[in-house]
Length: 296
Image 1 (cartoon, one colour):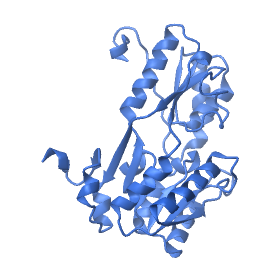
Image 2 (spheres, one colour):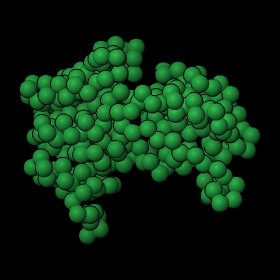
Image 3 (cartoon, helix red, strand yellow):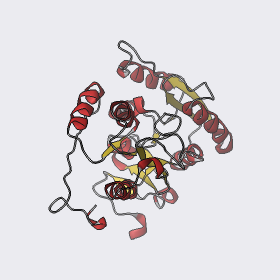
Image 4 (cartoon, helix red, strand yellow):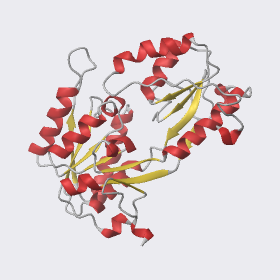
């Protein structure tokens, strides 16, 4: 924001509101506090926060980030003309499944059978998960691996997926999986630490779609570059502060991605990552701050 002329020491007041993993039930109360403060603009990270804010206000401008498929989710009317009070940044969807599967295969050359973790809805082509699954099936044929879905169903109140996530990952191992992918899903993302640790426990090398999965112990992530994503968010915020109407600000597509490798997880899984893949990694986690191969 300071690069765009706004600074907390001079002309900007920022209030942060965080919700820890597994505490999604607190979201409505947090949103009520935000709306009661009458901010000039709200930044929502992730689809759950954006949807809750959309339900709470139709007047306060909202800038979203890390929210795939904003049109299908009902956040905006279209990418080119969002309508309403929401705009922001959405990740690219086309080709990402193939890219992630190719990279997982390159990092783990013996990979042959990959489990795909999803919540219900993956078997309907009318949903985002359904389209992701269709794309992944085509990607698997191209890469030369077998894939199958393991499903984590909601239980109890309809929001608790802890036990079924663990059961689904255990099922993946029992069915002979030697790798793990996820369909992009807000419910699964809220269980990222659980998923990353369970994958490691069952010796399943995983490729994930957000950096945070790798930070929590997942092996790999091919994920939006957070810095470039938030720079786009800042540009939207400044435009709105200066009088722009979010309804007329087209959704920006995130085109910068990071390849992330957790070296500690690779060691824990007993993997020897090929040097050809290491040269493609843009961010290493763990491994005693290992130098990048290109630095040598």
